[in-house]
Amino acid sequence: MMISLALLLLFPSNLFAAEAAESAISAGDTAWMLIATAIVIFMHVPGLALFYGGLVSDRNVVSTMMHSFVSLLVVSIVWVLWGYTLSFGTDIGGLIGSFEFFGFNNVGDEAMGTIPHYIFAMFQCAFAAITVAIISGGIAGRISFPAWILFSALWVTFIYSPMAHWVWGGGWLYEMGELDFAGGTVVHILSGVSALTAAIVIGPRSNHLEKGHHPHNIVLFLIGAATLWFGWFGFNSGSALASGGLTALSFANTQVAASAGGLGWLFIEWIHRKRPTLVGAATGAIAGLVGVTPAAGFVTVPSAIIIGLIAAPVGYFGIHFVKARFKYDDTLDAFGVHGLAGIWGAIATGLFATTSVNEAGNNGLFYGNPEQLLHQLIGVGTAILLATVGTFVILKVISLFMPLRVSKEDELRGLDLSFHEERAYSTVATASTDSKSTSIPS
Image (cartoon, rainbow, N blue to C red; front, side, top):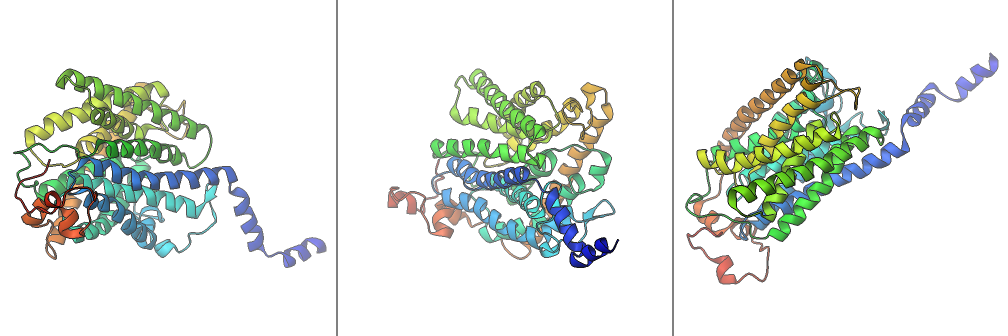
């Protein structure tokens, strides 16, 4: 008894607590999550920046890449200051997180599951940042850069953080049982629908219906697409928050869904347009990745193939028929790929989810639980409503203080020179690059 008392006096209880917390942390899980977080950031920059940059005209390469790069800068700071605590702080009425983590207070090397809290928080930061960047694809070539900076900060605060809390942070959708393994509703539906809303509010590019717009550099685009594919393994498999069987399942599902989506798009385009294209096949792979994201840790590998394969016609139809019918100017088809394929993926999770691969999930419709499909549809509807109304309000508030878009002269000249005074390619002829002609470059 005396020996025990002496030990307690020599080694305070908080020391034992610290040792217990440290022992809960797995070195293997921590190493994987460090890698996964870095991969998701690499997926954002340079991945998404190259993907979008290759698709625009050669006069808007720098400005388009800047949208991706600056969103990473802005969101990272907002996340540390208040975004993380609003998303993952202690639940308040199912609606928002508390301020316990404000300014990263109470975020340290303590265990969050089997990884340090720091790593979990920064992994989620990478998700928030790339979600904002995806939106820029709908408004590339015409949004004012100051407006974009302010939009990035406001959108992640008032749109992303609440939705992340509802789905992942203990909010009402989480309690209801809606399944979203890696961001079907939180990332892709939110960003895709927000991109469409922003494109409509800001308006189309000048004369965008009078002349076709083609990718200026397919090589850059493909490098970006391949980097996104690579990064998606960190995105989906990292969402297991550990290194184990569930990580391996989501890895396999990610690969096969991307492949099925790429093949599906290729053959649809080949039949419809009589030509299979590299841009189409790569876009289909991205659509497959988007589709499987919410389902990656809840479905079998054959189901992932079906999800990826169906994501291709969903995205293709959205771009070549819905967009053409309603004539909105979603510059880089953020809604067609992320919005529509994300909606399909969230619904598909309610169809194909099975506890045989993940006991922490639920069975879907095809495994005897039709209620799960209803939960998924509620999640989809919530994301669409929040993205539409929230993005509209944010843009209207910003417009009270600054212009949302650049002048027509600056737009026709290209934002690279008119705002940033930087050329993407020094070999481009000065007369061509500096021209203030009113014609739109292809």
